[in-house]
Structures are given as C-alpha cells and as structure tokens.
Length: 150
Image 1 (cartoon, one colour):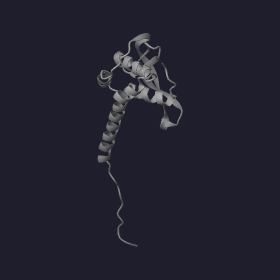
Image 2: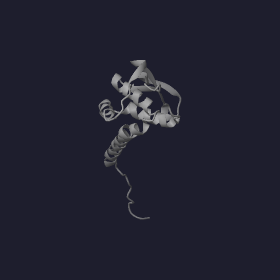
Image 3: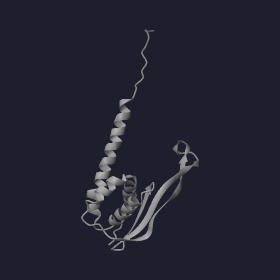
Image 4: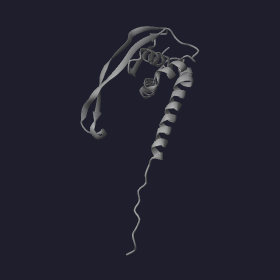
C-alpha cells in the first residue's frame, strides 16, 4: 500500500535514480529480493525537453538548448504508481527508475534504500570528492612579497 511521502524525499531519490549509470542501476536492481510485476500507464518514450538557464545563476532565464529524455509511468501490482525520467535514450533505465520510485512508496522502501539508494549516494559522494581532490591538486596560491622596508 502507498505511504505518505515528503516531496523533498521523493525528489531526492528520483534525482539519484535519474543520474545513476544504467549498468550500475541494473546490477543493484538484480540484488532485490522482490521485483514487482507492473502494468504500463505510459510505456517508455524518448523525446526532447528545453533546458533553461540563467545568466550568473540569477539573471533572466533563457533557452539553453534541447536535451534528450526518456520517460515512463507504470503501476506495480499493489496499485502504486511510479514515474521515471532519465537523460538519454535508455528505456530500461527509465523503467527501473519508475519501478524503484513505486517501490519507495511501499513497504519495500527500506530494502530499496539499503540495497540501491545508499550505495548510489556513496558512489556519487566518492566521485564528487575525487573530482574535488583532483581540482584541489591544481590549485595555485598567489602571494606578494614585500620589497624592502619603508
């Protein structure tokens, strides 16, 4: 049965699923004990969306360009609806994201959190830290030496 979910929490796991590598998502999904059957409400479809930006992050919005997105909506056996939106053309990744979204709204949420979301969060944090360390290694500190005394 569907649980009441905070919008911020759902936004977090959907973002994580959308940004995960397809192969990693498939591997983690295969570790789940219960993999529910589903009926399509909207089969995976690929299309384009307009990406908008802001000058300096705060200026007037402008159309940056188009991005390819695959989306789908499904209903698992208990009637819970899940949505999946992923960048690119991977119908399998969109399907898994939608299934996991639905499962996170049920009693299976703890298993999905432990076996899928936590490892993905840790991998994302490790990648971010490695990128930051690589950038920090190239940092140059400039300083001025005083010439003589007045």
